[in-house]
Length: 294
Image (cartoon, rainbow, N blue to C red; front, side, top):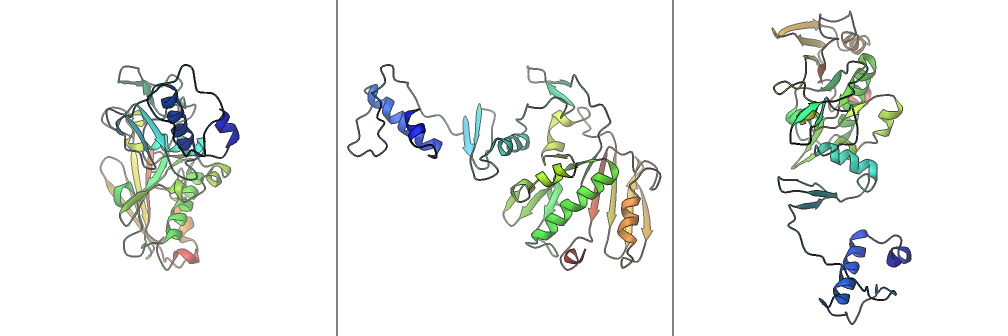
């Protein structure tokens, strides 16, 4: 406490290292360093604590922690937003280790390794929207027409937000594939703008988390897919039979995007499209060369 007050902006790891050295000296397990600029001014502890090193897979500490069966604790590292409680909560969501919200998922832990339905189901039926037709359920920025194009990612999120607002859906954030790495949108975008616009969102891991699944075999009750291409072709696939509906409109027409969006509203598109629990959209018109003119 004395050192934390004296150095309020010091990194927590340095504080813990000094604490360990100080108690090792007090317990006779270490020698007093000759040069120690951070030497505490308080007397040695009468009852020093004991510490030991743990396997890095037991207590995982990393900017991209990978927990395993033996993991008992996770300590996220990194800069903003991971330095703050909100960022740590998002990371916990991505790891499937967040238990802080009642009703956020369909199921909760039964305390014995199983799942039981949430006690307080949502007041209204939830519907979701996510990106379709890309890699790893996300957006690749290392392919033709998308290579290193950050504006494509930002415009795709804006497009998802538009569909979400229009259809009263919740966005499932896409993963972002860039070169050798897999990124999350919340490390590049300020998701506060979605909150301010009244658009709910879920972490990229949401569809993979068994707690969000409908049952043991199906993550969603029903799924529909739509796509809009640069030549004005619009597609929709709805229902168990997989029937594909197609429209053609001149893409230069200012009504094309409005018509595509309107197809997702109740009573406008193919039967079942607006009611599908998960809507997968594939806005192929958002690509290099066109995105800047929207």
